[in-house]
Image (cartoon, rainbow, N blue to C red):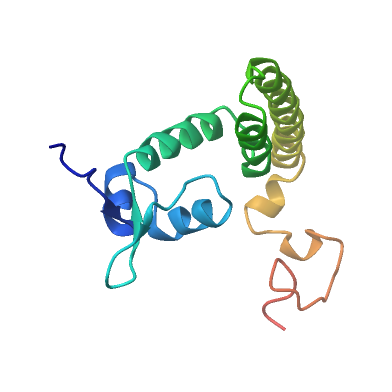
Length: 149
């Protein structure tokens, strides 16, 4: 006689995977983690596939894939199990890398603006020309206007 498969509650799954309970519920609602059933007290129950799915999701997120992209990949995996997902994953990774490269460019531009501001406006940083921060003399803006009016 074989032992029944151990089931875990959402809290146990959260503790085991490091995902929050809210995140697990969202992943379950998105059909990325499957509930094995409900307990007599109506708690969600998960089997041993749930921690595996959570780890796959964590790994794909760590590669920059969005939840939407993971859903697409999971859809192909489930709908067409004979189709290898490697080529689709490669495409998604290329998309992720392009997003990352664009974000790095944006961040580098911001860093350059910060450096230029520091070099050009030490007076503002020293507190001597706060009113000129945005060219709004006499403004009552909390972000650098006339606080002493």
